[in-house]
Image 1 (cartoon, rainbow, N blue to C red):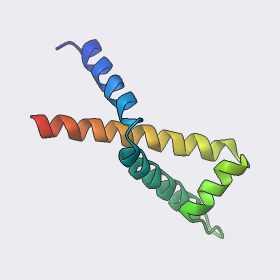
Image 2 (image 1 turned 90 degrees about the vertical axis):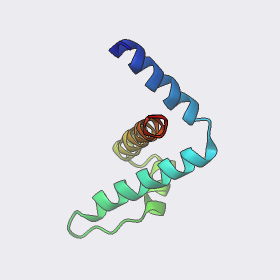
Image 3 (image 1 turned 90 degrees about the horizontal axis):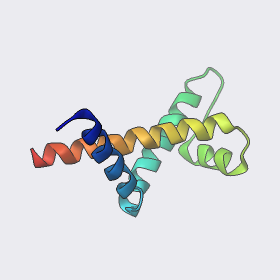
Length: 88
């Protein structure tokens, strides 16, 4: 299998997983937790996953939403990789 075909398979699976509410809830919650952890690591800052969700909904900082989206994409990629391991 060539790299282009493999990349297309991965992209298709990631898109399909976006329609799976269980996977998306898990991946989103993990992304929110990761971003809140990063914010809380800044001295003097306290942040929870729920606070990150509020910041995203209020559109207070586009960088936060972008970071959460990056983690969601990474999580979906991880799910795809795990699905390959189950098959192999």
